[in-house]
Image (cartoon, rainbow, N blue to C red):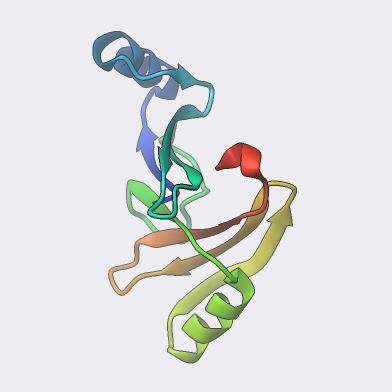
Length: 121
C-alpha cells in the first residue's frame, strides 16, 4: 500500500485532530507511515486528506483513492489495458517516481506508484 487519500471538508483541521488525539506526525501532506517490507527494505505509506472539492480523484466520484506501490509500471499499465481495465490518462514521471491511474470495476480510482527515490520509501 502506497497511500490512502480521502476527501475532507477541512483537511488542516482533520490533520490537526489526528495529531492531537491519535499522535500522528502530520504535516501539510498528511502523515507518512514508515515500515520495512519482507526483504527488510525501507518503505512508506502516505495517509492524506484532500479538500472535498478536489478533482484529483476524477473521474471517480468516490470520497477516496488508494495508492499502490508497484514495480515496472509501464509494463503493468500495458497489461492492465490488454485485460480491459480502464487506464486513466498517461503515465507521469517525477524525480520521486512514476504514476499511473486506473478504475476498478466499481469506479474507484486507483493510483499506481513506482517509487524512484529512496527518500520516499
